Amino acid sequence: MKKQIVILLFVTFCGGCGSSKLAPSGAPASPLAAFQGEGPIQAVATVGMVGDIVRNVGGEHVTVTQIMGAGVDPHLYRATRDDVLLIMDGDIVFYSGLMLEGKMSDTLIKVGRSKPVFAVTEMIDESELLEPEEFKGHYDPHVWMDVSAWSQCVDAVAKSLAEFDPVHAEDYKANAAKYRQQLAELHEYGIKSIGTIPVGRRVLITSHDAFNYFGRAYGLDVLGIQGLSTESEAGLQRINELVDLIVAKNVRAVFVESSVPRKNIDALVEGARAKGHEITVGGELFSDAMGDAETYEGTYVGMLDHNITLVARGLGGDAPATGMQGKLSHPEGAGE
Image (cartoon, rainbow, N blue to C red; front, side, top):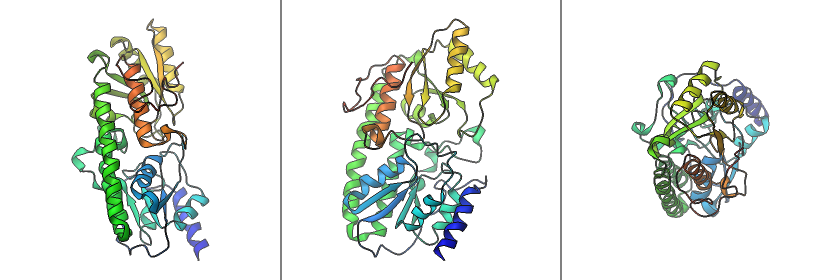
């Protein structure tokens, strides 16, 4: 029976999902019975940013297995049969929501009928979510780029774990408070560091529109070559428009992304240089995936510390080369 269920779910995964607008979370929380097994709880998380919250809030009571690792683009990711087995074997499942995991959202909702499945964005106030005009009918899923907004997801995870495992509810609450304090400090670092960029240089150009929340939170004019999803294609007209803007605004650096091919950024640089404007690749930012596991950049705090520091320094601002905590592995990024 389990094998038949796995095959059915695998087919559903590969079939993708519809285009109708979902609620902010993508699905309601699963009102299922509390955990009855022996700890630690086996939690499954789709992406690194979600897994990092669960690890910090769950502490010693939760073991987290992550489906998508460093450099993996969740917009394009297709789950394997092993991924489906992993979800079926887990005690509780956490995902981002807001259509980030577009090709597996429907299946996560279906699994939620038989086990706890939670979208961590479910408690974010809709007024804080962006709905770009070109993506009408869907919210921008890249909320983690605004540390203050993403920190609300910590409460969603703490609440879900406390309801699922009430015996350790106070531990989850304490862990969540400690983690939110770390995120508050990170957010302040972002405001301070990006604020040192000269006003006329606060233009951030990246591979795709993953940084709109980042721009809103820290005062940057953000432009992506591709749209919100990396499934969209960047046309020649779009690249030419951005080349003209780079020259007109005297932009000195553009940035590649760890989970998106850099060919379009290279085309921008070549186009600008053809018009006599010297520009560099300021480094590689983390967009839809964190850094390698077991590294500082493989944590959410490290991921955003890296992005904030690299952008601030690349655009002419003042930030310590090794970041907020002096832990950045490659403080100068992956520039040319």
